Length: 481
Ligand SMILES: NC(=O)C1=CN([C@@H]2O[C@H](COP(=O)(O)OP(=O)(O)OC[C@H]3O[C@@H](n4cnc5c(N)ncnc54)[C@H](OP(=O)(O)O)[C@@H]3O)[C@@H](O)[C@H]2O)C=CC1
Ligand SMILES: O=C(O)CCC(=O)C(=O)O
Image 1 (tube, rainbow, N blue to C red):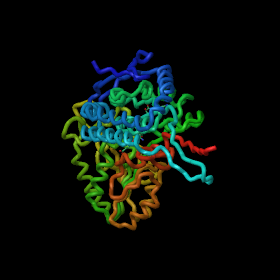
Image 2 (cartoon, rainbow, N blue to C red; image 1 turned 180 degrees about the vertical axis):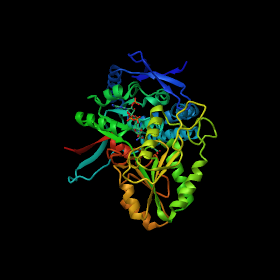
Image 3 (cartoon, rainbow, N blue to C red; image 1 turned 135 degrees about the horizontal axis):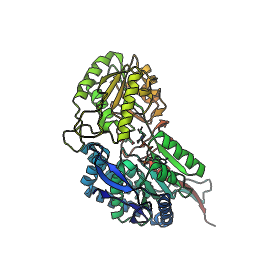
Image 4 (tube, protein in one colour; image 1 turned 30 degrees about the vertical axis):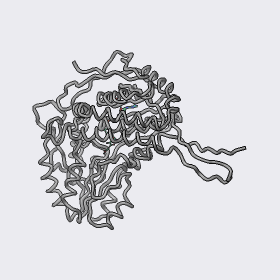
């Protein structure tokens, strides 16, 4: 029988009142890898209540002591690295080396925010009154709701939970149902580290019920979300209505520009990795490859050759380079977009079909379209799969114009050996992550992460930027009588 995972409320592992479970499926073979609670609105309210009850003593514990607990969580996750990473691959499909890398990143994020415990909580500012002391003090928001997607089931929950906690908030965490077992294993590490009851609460269940109850609660003080634009809009609406601070990270349609003077090998390997690693299921994945006409044919044939070497299969097998789509619904979405691209008149020059295999996994071939124009849906909508749209342009200016011709603005790359072109790109591109001679995916935990336009609420996560979301500022003025 598959392992059973419970909610974690007020420091206790609890069954949901619903008595119902949700199975988590391995996308490589459709086997059930574990079951989680299908929670009720009462469960959500219990979790929010527990977080509210715990928030005063957690704040009063102090930033230094909160940081020390995060160091313990990092140690425990390090001990469980192999199990968490294996589970991640089984639950979401990315290859084991990618899952190990993501888990290691989770450990580094925990250590980064643990060390925030020893950093400043405010600034002293000179007052116009020489006898007064004026300073700012950062204080927690209170209870933060955290809703995460399935594509980075270790890193994203940790990059939201760790800063929330170190800056003194308590948390109600609702993971994506498709990655809820991995999420439960992460929460266990926090539990084992001795987090006081109610500081971190974990509830599983559908977005439309559990997620909806969380975002519409009047008893939370912040909500952070990563996922689709549609759900992001619901989060923004509910949070605005209730006066709750919110943060959204959503989709991307990330361009890679390859200019005539680019280093061809670097550009090809970056596109391969940016577009097809994690089966294209990253919000920072490269999905539009905009190539200048002078290098187009050479680039195309090198890309086709490298793509033909990709091995597809179960992410646990050592010779697999690309795993399955994370779920049946994601698999269907990718195949639908491939059909849309064909109907729009783009040409499939590689892949374009489900992979014939003996397993019942959700495998799609890496797919490359050419003759794509910027107005096509495959050049405008986030596919979240291993699909590249090749677009030919004549000049740097045209390349940047096409790159910006989208409502998204998360990440963008340029390949060139001309510093002038690089400088123009840095100025003109509308993206939160601007990458020169590097793939579009690749986020560093100590730097701000987030997008422009419809990719985000304009807020930033990670690095020092996290502090801006998870705290409020008190400006204190003190004068002796
Ligand atoms: N920016 C990114 O990193 C991501 C982008 N996406 C994009 O979104 C598309 C759809 O993916 P999908 O997983 O359906 O994304 P969703 O936005 O539906 O899911 C993200 C999270 O939101 C929850 N959720 C869903 N509906 C609600 C709701 N009404 N109220 C509150 N929370 C809710 C989900 O729960 P549950 O899992 O239970 O439904 C999950 O935890 C992808 O194809 C991709 O284009 C998806 C994931 C990550
Ligand atoms: O590229 C990364 O490392 C992170 C991407 C991400 O945040 C996402 O896909 O949701």
